[in-house]
Image (tube, rainbow, N blue to C red; front, side):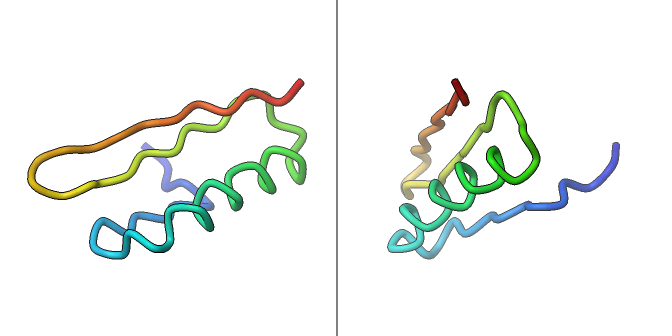
Length: 55
């Protein structure tokens, strides 16, 4: 498996949630990608995932 070029895992830094989502959207436009998946650790064994689609 190849490493992701824009891997941003920040499970302990919740204020970075918006910047991680913004970076994913920026990378969609930069690479002309179709989908981006953002996963975040909320804490206490919880997590969330968001899929962005470029139209």
